[in-house]
Length: 254
Ligand code: SAM
Image (cartoon, rainbow, N blue to C red; front, side):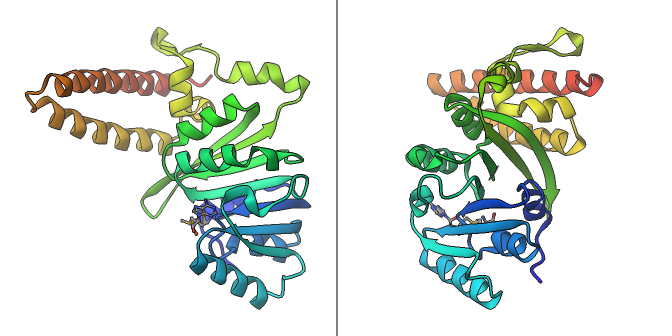
């Protein structure tokens, strides 16, 4: 029986029962194999662009006796599916900008898809931006820590009339305690649901990010170049703003 990591398990838990799934960048096809073995999905495409993982996925599916349910295909992003073929897509374990470019290049293939479950390793804001710009409602966010790494899982659904209003509300400017105003840009960066939940893992993630920013600021401010000094000032501002959001989120549960 396939045993999933905590990260993949949390993604699996978000796949609706009976889904027709495409798992893009499936690597060893662990996620669709686990879901199919448990009878949680009726059909799956496991897409892989690289030959090694593609072959590993084929082996996994064959050995699990799931070739009738899981179709392993070689190709770039959403090129491996046809419009209306699946209703749920998972993309996990790659950078947010690659994820956004896969979704962008494959827009025509999203016909019939009602849910996207995305787990970017970095650049989560770029995924939120893409979803927001292309009419996908961010439905939920989760954050977890495993083996010293922190991951976010973003789930989005297609917008129908009712959800258009919710779509606006998610990124609406909000006031935290201490009268801190958080604008859409900050919500896209830090996650509207994650900010509301303000979990310990989320605080740890931003403490790590602040450390990285402080290091960059230190390096830039030692330079005598005017452009570097300017950049250092921008980063110092960014650090102050994030710290304020964290301080104000600690006191309030919206
Ligand atoms: N999704 C699995 C997970 O979360 O554990 C595997 C993640 S692995 C780090 C990323 C996988 O995405 C690699 O197997 C890589 O070959 C694949 N990949 C990268 N770019 C891709 C693309 N444009 N289309 C399909 N697969 C891609």
